[in-house]
Length: 379
Image (cartoon, rainbow, N blue to C red; front, side, top):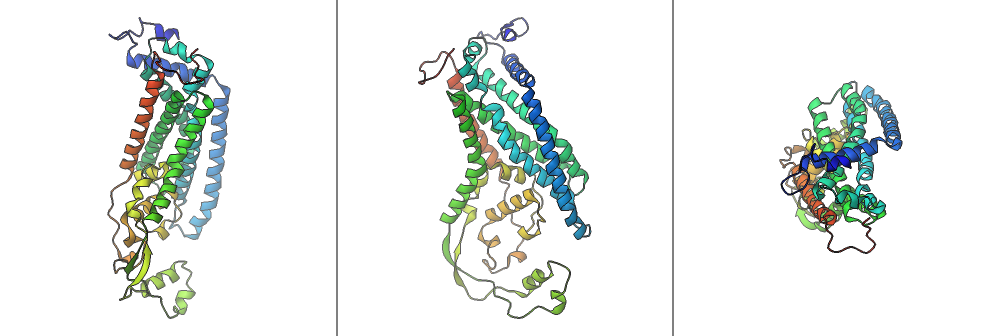
């Protein structure tokens, strides 16, 4: 705390407050060093390393068999990379709030927040320093995961530029989620409420967006008259049936089938009207930020993020890419959907949401406090 009051090393500004960057650095140093002194933090990193290692080993062992069956056409590096990164993002969304959800509410309950507020530090420096410390702590777990991410890159099938894009967006998601945790911690009176509130908001982005999209898609459904795909009424040749190619039969039926000349009534879901609800989903943002060229849903070979990205683009494109012959052409005959990336909208939604929370948090930490919530402790 003496560092925050040392006006010779960190001179005050013209308004009598500590220089912004000096104050931010002071709070960050205090908060981060407190975490570094905790043995539990190192234990968690060790457990994280072991768990990610086991997951990587299991994924590599499973997908190696698929690579052998494909005679080298399918490289397990792509599958391993996306599976490991999917698990890293999933687990990161579970642990990132834990680094931030108790930072300010815990100090308030222990009576130490008032001591910090009574120094030259401004509310923005207090919130920003604690937020930065929580983000760096979360990034440490991402750094621990990098050896396994790079291992999947070494297996082949993944561009290094795509690895960088994934890591960059994953770092941004950790920044947003820890920011939400710090903001909710500043707003909440008790640590328990801040932890629960933070996890509920994280779940809102990760799960709530999916539920909203599903409900919105059902509400967008309406009956329409459209051509349909006629059934093939004769058996495939014997050589197709006996073919060792697992896709030979489906390819044959796809070639022989054709669109009807008449129309029939069908229930059409217009997902293009509600796809924006998925924009702020962390998994959609990461997948769309490092998207690959579009491939149909049955050609993704099990890559998780590629499937998510292609699925979102199909939903953006609308019924023409979801129903055969909706436009008089089979889906396999249509060109790749020309849709804009959805991740910039997701970034905007998350930034605006986080900005509103931080503004509320700033008002809750600001002193002097004009009105106190019932049960709020000052010192």
